[in-house]
Length: 440
Image (tube, rainbow, N blue to C red; front, side, top):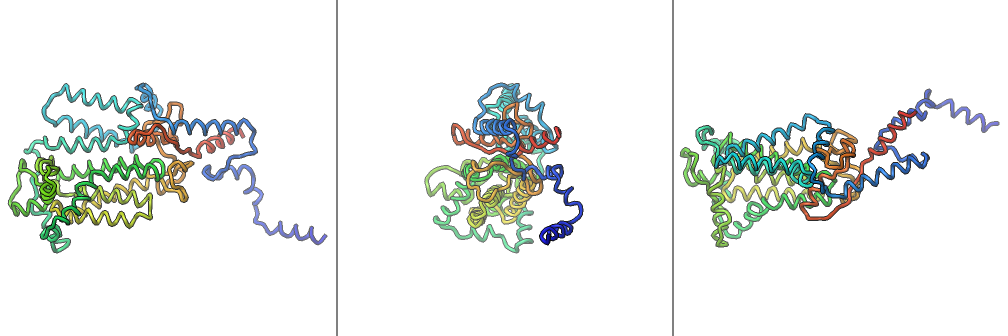
């Protein structure tokens, strides 16, 4: 009797309304990402979940091999558009502008070139590579064709602005200090990051992130890299400034369009190895007066930010590489320190926005991408499923699924791999819970 009395007293101490909060209808309101599969469901529900998982796995591990343009039209019809899709309008505008100003006029050739690229974007077998990398191709075309912009509509070339900013911010020109004493060993040491790493490191970082980072990281890196480069070239065209080598060769006398560029310190590398790797290319550069911002620094900083985000243990190595290439740009007399600051601000701003809204979050204990069962996107939007670019998955897949077949196809094409495994999202269990609530 005493034991029964104790139980009654314990129950009266619980807060009021506890029975209602523990009712099945309230428990169903737990977010889907925390829901475990309800094993007590009937066998048909379990069978459907297993079938759904197997379909998702097959769509992830398979490359797109279809040539049907109608598949893309169907995906466009069912796609949920957002304000961020304006990026494709911008890419199309830059592409058309670059083709329009390019010499020779050749309207028929340019029209066929534009139609050919549209065909690559609309065929599923080629779209899986050319759509995520569209910003990079646009940047390359934009940079090359900028040489054909008429001189009479361009702004004046600024000769004194960067040296003045250098004196105001630092009190000394670091480029002149670092380049005042040269040595073949220092030339080679500066050549590695500036002449080799700048061109090869983006592909190396992409391959590393594809294998070891969360699925969906590489497409965000490619878009960030492309748009940052497009923005950098646009600033260089609207705000043309002379680099340090111009001050060394011509002083502060006015610069004119049509003047040749200079390889500066890289000419010593050509002389050292007896080859013409940089002299001709820098002399005939499309934007010889594009000192600000430094895309060499911007690219290195963006790569370091992505690698540090995915692999925090490599942060020290990333900082060393950024300092290394920043020193190399000034030692080779290609950039002022203020150019590096401008490139760093642009790179960090783009990375901060991408990390907040689109970059997949790393999960502790996951070493390879194939260990991910689902992907969470952004720093503030929880349980957001990665949006597939124009629906890389099959037509019957969900409109905003987490199949991530776009990145698998892109990197598989890049690395010439036949197939790869992938991850699935917990949204399948969430949708089944929603359907159960509707039936209830």
